[in-house]
Image (cartoon, rainbow, N blue to C red; front, side, top):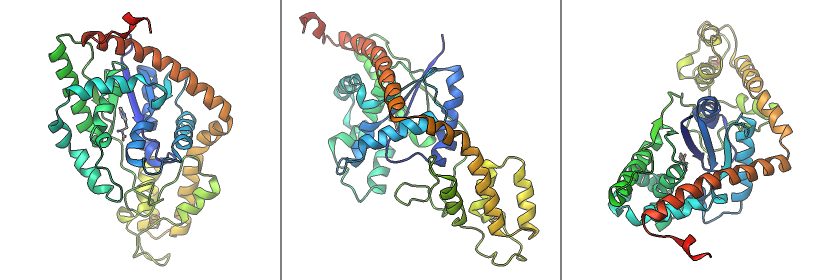
Length: 331
Ligand code: TRP
Ligand code: SF4
């Protein structure tokens, strides 16, 4: 039996190169060795976007399409939208009941997010419970492992603590304690060398056209001291070069030589990088074109069906342990 993993992404906008190198390309590989559940975490997005949810459904749908285009294979993995599987919320409610407030208040990501997203009022009951719902997302599939970035480690630790508390209280171990699957993924800077973010718009989306990619790469920040072609460049402080390091394989040594030896100009250097990114995204673009709305809808419907089946079985087990047995009532 293959081990199970679950992971999710919040649909806060189009997926971009940062998602691809940071998570998605790893998910695609994991599909061979694990039984995978991949989820578009729309409830989690709503927790920070509740003041303006008008894009929520469209974003979830496009994120699912991006995931499929990037290589999530519905024949191998279960892909679904979190809110299509209401069982998550019932298990989250069980976890809400047993999770001490202090665990949530001291969670480092909670404090960070309150600070970073200062433009929004996140002092809500729901947002405090963000990691509780995440714990339910994971436990409801009895996931053994969760591929996440280091930023999510506190949430995974909380998941393990909640699971242990559940087991301790109800004297039966029904959930595996999930392990993080950390990959040493490189951190991709934004096009302007700031942190890549939706609000700054400093990214290349997986769905960008070749023209758009070329335009965006042209606008990237380079070594500010390299003005003329004959100026020798410093690749280590150049954002363009940091992209070569991630996307260009052995070619990166060649680029370093071009730059330090003032052999090619920044315009040409960027043009070549754009070519590399355009080629890399060509299969994603092709698959995206094949994925009609109808096809994506079908895949998500089938995914929700499979996910619900697995989730309902676990929920039933958990409810029995706390003596909630609605099925006795033939409702
Ligand atoms: N909190 C995760 C993020 O922001 C998204 C997420 C929701 C998730 N539920 C999850 C990730 C369960 C892993 C497992 O990236
Ligand atoms: Fe950056 Fe390339 Fe210009 Fe060097 S030549 S500064 S690596 S864009």
